[in-house]
Structure formats: C-alpha cells, structure tokens
Length: 259
Image 1 (cartoon, rainbow, N blue to C red):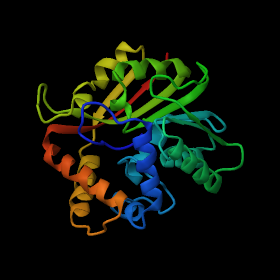
Image 2 (image 1 turned 120 degrees about the vertical axis):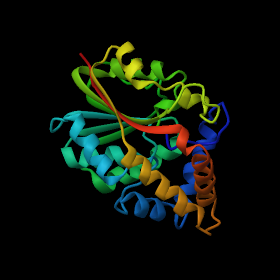
Image 3 (image 1 turned 135 degrees about the vertical axis):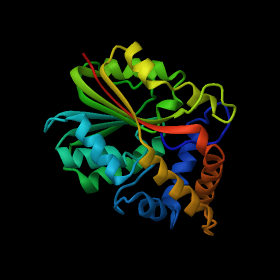
Image 4 (image 1 turned 90 degrees about the horizontal axis):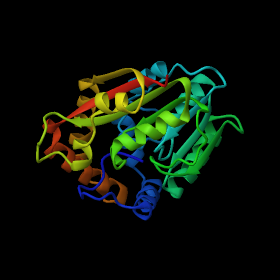
C-alpha cells in the first residue's frame, strides 16, 4: 500500500497500483525528492510518509526480539519493514496486493538483509493468507484506511499476533466528524475505538503534528517541481489534493498489544 491515492470513493485495484509502482521504479527523481524531504537515506524505498525519526519511533514501540517475526501488512515496496528488520535482526514477512511492489521489495531486501530473512506474499489487509498467532510484531504504515472497513483489518491483525505481540499503525483521522472535505475512507478510521473493539490491550493513539508538518513541507516542495515523468506527476497530484484538505486531517500513531 501507500500514501493517499486518488480521491475516488472506491479504491483502485491491483492493476492501478502495479502501474503506479512501475512508474516509480522508472522515475529518475521521485524517490530522491521524497527521501530528501522526509530525511530518509537514499536506499530506503518509501511508499508512505514516515520520516526517519518516525521509523525510529515505530521500531522502539514494536519491541521486537532479535530473531522475532515482523509482519509488514500493506507493505508496498517494504522500505520501512526492511529497515526495521535490519535494525532489530527480525525476520520479515511483507504482504501487499501489488505483485509489482513485492518484486521491488524482494530486490530491496536482498540488498539490506541476509538471505532467508525476508519473504513477501500477495494478499490484502483483510485476507493476508498468513497463519494466526505467529508474529511477534505487526506494522501497517499509512495503509489501514484502505481496508473496508478498517475495523476488519484490525481483527485480522489481532489474529496474526502472538499473545503479547505488538502492533504499530500510522494513519490519518478526521479532525472533526462530518467534514465533507475528508475522504470517506479516512472518515471511517477511529483507531482508539476500533483497536479496543478488535480486542487489543494497551491501546495508545497519539497525534503527531511534527510528522504532519513534514508532510506539508513535502507537498509544498513537490508543487514547485518541473519534472514531467509519470511518478512525479502523480506525486504532484497527490500533493495538490492533500494540501486542499490539509486542515481537515490529523496524523496519528497508534500502538497496542495482543492479549
């Protein structure tokens, strides 16, 4: 998965995202611009909006044991999951519905992780195809809003975690209810309520205005770019939509424990 995509109510299918990831791979500038403005190293293939400091915070809150199993659900190119597995010595399984994204993730993992430490599978937020009660930690970066409904994805995440396993989610929520500027898929996100409904304990949901400021910096800078390749044009369009609704959304970071 990825950042907020076209404003249509229905989420585009895997074919759309396959082309989106192919365009990114063919871009001469898109990754470099995003990495520079989010403070990321050049090797990290981001498909969300998590900053370098944000990665450190997610890593800390996951509390992964060395050699433990980390799931990255809606992983896209899995740049964040690969980085956290690299830092912690965890094994990584990534799931996404774009086969093109997963091929790019496999290539990145070969560069950053020892052989056999990462694997990737086609699946969705609601149907990962993975065995239950097996993971020490699970992360879903900037993607849970694409589940219909988000609560169903949280139930699937709960199924996948061992007792005591840790969950980390990054997403957006509406600042106020009923705001017509907020896309329906964001309006459906209420992590404090739904993590509890899904059976999680130690639920903690924090607003991250510093991450939100980094997003604004990115979108404003992208608007000034003149690179006409497909990936940059898509990024500019995403930035335009995001700035139009910027004050209606808040950035949130949620963690919880599977009892």
